[in-house]
Image 1 (cartoon, each protein chain N blue to C red):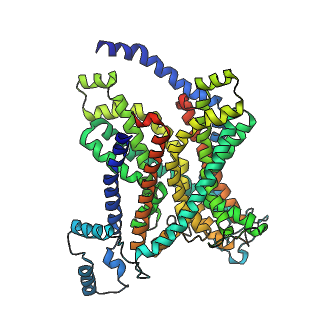
Image 2 (image 1 turned 30 degrees about the vertical axis):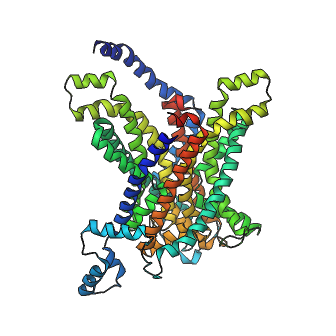
Image 3 (image 1 turned 180 degrees about the vertical axis):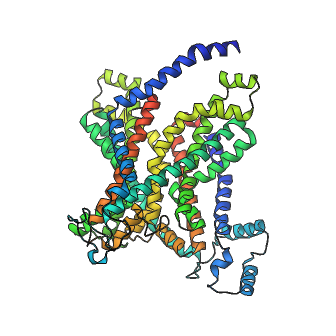
Length: 295
Length: 306
């Protein structure tokens, strides 16, 4: 135990300190992190200020101006029901970001908890959780989400649940692996020795050491989750009209592809830029937290 | 080889059992039971009880599962609620259409992805590398259904070169498979690049350079062959993403595949069809992943003996 005590105070503590500052320094030195950061800030700003920025109500119907091309009156034109496309795109950003964050939090929380339990208790709980994860992974993610929606029926609630279910395994596997690696480390054995309970060891000692990988995984998953959710809405299985969701708007614009190509073009571009921003951010966070993975 | 093969195959029965239970449970968990879904609106209680008995829904759940499983093993997935045709008969031609699309897309994705990855890696940190990687990041971020629209607008509407939808002629295959292939190509390019970079820093590459082997030969013969091994392992995941993307692509291009059949069936609440499609997708994905793992073991002797 003596050896463990020394290594913890003398070596682990300074290493922790340099790592913390290192992350911020590396992020600040990374050009793509700045690009990703500004894109995300602009996006979140646009989403938050949507009611102020939007030229009109995103669901206000104006049939006289149906499919109007972009003009001074409506910068990005109007859709088949005469609704302002820019207003719908801005409110769509709100919906996509909110859905994405809620889903990632739900999947990350559940997946990490399962991984923590599996890695800490091993034995039967691990077997049960790992086999369940195997079954989940036997479905391609998008299809698993589709199957959940098929069971629960289309809607906002089943959309979040469906995408979360398809995202849980990635967190479970990851956290389980990290916990298995930590179990034999001195600080965990030391906690056992002083009589810490299972809950205390899991949440006070193991979880904080998994946080870095969980954060990286969450930021990488956010883009996938937003893409999957809009894909489900595109298929008519997610957000239902008249709510301004990008996937649903793209699906709706299919019938007017020839008459109003500006609608799918601009809506899709908004979705692309959002997903790109979070992909860049995810990559930057991963490279900063784990320089070994950087290429 | 046999130990690895056995270990890999030993997980298969349990996974398939889990998949079958999950697919069976889909209908039982659906709001309004299976019998309610079959009856027209406004059916009375007596009719409901009668139908439940006819369908065996008055038996305990595990007996229902065993009956369902028995039918499944005999290749009976039930009948479509709407056409009353055998689900297997409805699914088969649709799956062939999906397989055609998936295979061609995977080929396109691999060719483009590997070539771009090698080009990026061999020009590390140059503008070529940066441009290729930015392009692939944009590719990963592009919603596949939107890419489909853009290609339709460009090649079907503006240029009039290719048909925008349907299946039958070879030209109708071009746009859907390119749409689906480009999305997967972006991922493969990124993986190929990082795998190539890792291999290129190995000692034997330096030895080959020291011997005076030409750079092209080093890239093709020494580096690429080894760099492709990790690429093969992620092909399984790529194939899963491709199947998901296929559902979207089939919807965009009105391609009569199993994905489109499944989505139409969900919207129509035709559960037997949905169950059948989900089951076949999952089994296909699992089998492809095992085949990929076996290929991996074949390509890399280190896996076979550890």
